Image 1 (cartoon, rainbow, N blue to C red):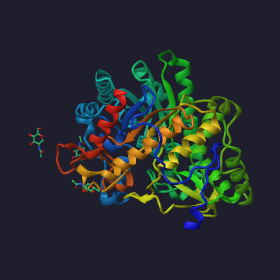
Image 2: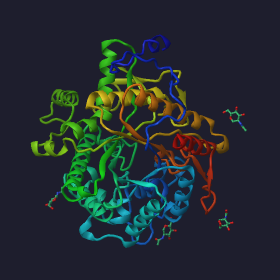
Image 3: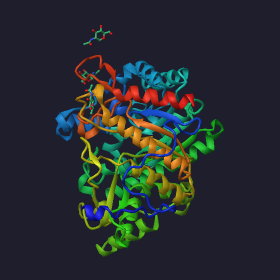
Image 4: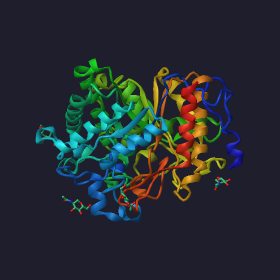
Length: 495
Ligand SMILES: *[C@@H]1O[C@H](CO)[C@@H](O)[C@H](O)[C@H]1NC(C)=O
Ligand SMILES: *[C@@H]1O[C@H](CO)[C@@H](O)[C@H](O)[C@H]1NC(C)=O
Ligand SMILES: *[C@@H]1O[C@H](CO)[C@@H](O)[C@H](O)[C@H]1NC(C)=O
Ligand SMILES: *[C@@H]1O[C@H](CO)[C@@H](O)[C@H](O)[C@H]1NC(C)=O
């Protein structure tokens, strides 16, 4: 292992390689561009609770947690979660106290549109909740970063229509987006249509997420991904056509574990590129360039043909769809947590996106493990990712829409590993900005508070505030990392 790892290089940084070892930057502690958007993030199902308040519709996460409790660690669910539905004013107070300039939250589609469809009518209570939330943020000088879809699909759309597999879902999503734009476009300047399409498709070819349709592996993830891209591009077009005078910016929030080659061999360098194209690139490339990356296209087409299929498992876009997708982002939203080392090999279900990529991944032993099995601490991967998107796509504006560290919450008043995580990731961002010329405009810490972490229930805690899940008050308490961030942001503001 060590022999392999000592050879790690970065293929796409023109100024030569930088080692995997973290190198402190030669810039001052607080050096960030003026107006850098420090913020924090949550998502509706993970924090709101009030799952059945008045006329809210059921979501696929309500459904799976209630009907298949063993799907979640300790049979937990988001019925109450952080009760942010009732406590949002307190949440805004605490984020203001830290000095955050932005709050990234998501709108629960079934809270606003109980059946998912505009034609069936909207919930006044649901809409009112988001109106009050946005108004309270603006009154406190905090920029709302609104995500339209962070995984809580209306169950009615899943049950009756196959969710993201239905060819019509991009139209339902565009109608929903139109409805939200019509209410909030004058107030909201940053929109994320869809959070982590790569994670969403894990529910349509794997059981990592709801609706957990693992049996569709190799096909479902590509169909769902295709419809997610179409949904995004329709919402983007609609905004440009009807709401652009509000001067808002729109993107998706893309994710992946950044892949570096496991050695400097051509095979490993190519494996790392495939790994990138099958994760971040799967969605970023069509959004910026209009169609799937040629590598993705050719590999999946070839594999499908070899399997004796008449059509590719990766659907094709029409020319009109390509034209509409191309350039459908005003900035790149990037969620970064960790990285991997890639080399050629076969892994994953046969067939599946993972197997199609012909990549196996390793950890560098110097990357510290965390309570989340998928996350090791590797800030250098963030700098590599920022350089990758700069070099591949002409240095687009990047907003880091998620970044954070999980622990078991056993020592919230001394969460030094989380502080270390933020400090080293901020340093990697500053290096990317000042040494590499990357266009990074903000950082959003995941998360404002401990919350429902999907299949991990409440076990993996990412918050800078802890939440007492045993108290009906869901009392929030500042962790040491929150004090640290408060100080860090204040020093930056001062300069
Ligand atoms: C909402 O769900 C809770 C359980 O989470 C239940 O106790 C309550 O009766 C439900 N309320 C309504 C109005 O259905
Ligand atoms: C898609 O929408 C059209 C028009 O409303 C409808 O006729 C068709 O049945 C829908 N397709 C599916 C798969 O739901
Ligand atoms: C906090 O944790 C660090 C190591 O992570 C340890 O050195 C220090 O003694 C701890 N402080 C307190 C007050 O527990
Ligand atoms: C919840 O908050 C209320 C009002 O602040 C307080 O009176 C009560 O003691 C708290 N309950 C618990 C269990 O913390």
